[in-house]
Image 1: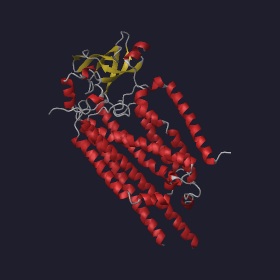
Image 2 (image 1 turned 135 degrees about the vertical axis):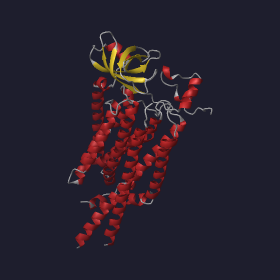
Image 3 (image 1 turned 90 degrees about the horizontal axis):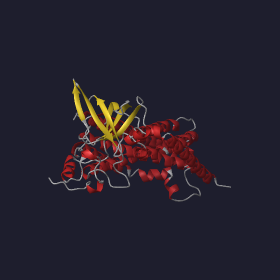
Length: 43
Length: 165
Length: 257
């Protein structure tokens, strides 16, 4: 049986990178949107 | 006079029905070319012309696998079956890891004049059943299933079975 | 401009629970306190499912360790299809009832759904090479999921392609509704045609063809993926609502001079 771990690691790697990147971008956008709204309302 | 919302809803429903009908008819018309492979029964019924390339799919029949070595490259003779018909296949080259008796395979190649399918490539198609090795072993020992002869018994008889350890 | 997105949302005569939650301001008040908790639970469940599948689930009798790819591939595929179903429902509300929140949700579901579809395609391809002997084949299942990916990409592009946002929302909603016909094709492709892709392991009819020690991590990981998807979509919709509020507040301030 050939070594399948490089393929498994690749699949889990792509998944992890996507989840972390998407979560981080979402969080950053959410925080920025809230901060700007607060700033606009206090002006 | 209908309210605009109602009118839009009916419009969407009617468009959806028309689109479904169109797509359904198209898929039914192209059904044969959407099929990735022919089963041995279809091959027996349709008699594809020798030399015409197509894909043959089915189970490797138990007791038919014979490998001969000519120099470095092995040549394997086996039969692909769907339980009703069987087609003899010959393949020169290294087979996939999962190839074994009872394994689902898809062979790409063409029939030759003598009724043997000459495969250029063999892909493994395995079943949809997932179980650890020890569950398979105990099913085998209990005489409930031998992977050589096709797919496992109904899932409810083994998917929460206790395995002695 | 943008401020009408908010003012239009206040239901004048219309009533019912649908309209109640379709109000962007109310959505914001409802979702904001939940978001941190949802994010925490999603993180824990996803991490647990992935670690369980990668490290602790048993190897398959036939596929060996390569079966571990199932714990990312299958949840990603389910979320990709459910995400598209949500997109289609939002589009229906956008076209028929002109709900502004449905437009915003459709715009924000697209990129996340496309990401999950991409994960599904790549993980399946990485599994196909050692198991089938090919990264890609043009069978009905693989092709219909690739079509799903392109539908997502088309929707993402179309909804942002117009100077007048409302035109983009209408055009993209029509695309999303027409593309929904692809969902039953994906699900039943393995039954309607001979495919190299295996049949459904888990279906509504009949027992799951999977041993319980492999089913549990699959369920945990599925739950984690679904919650992650919902949390990300809700956070993006909340951010979009805030961005629109900011724009209209700045506009009002500019008009006051």
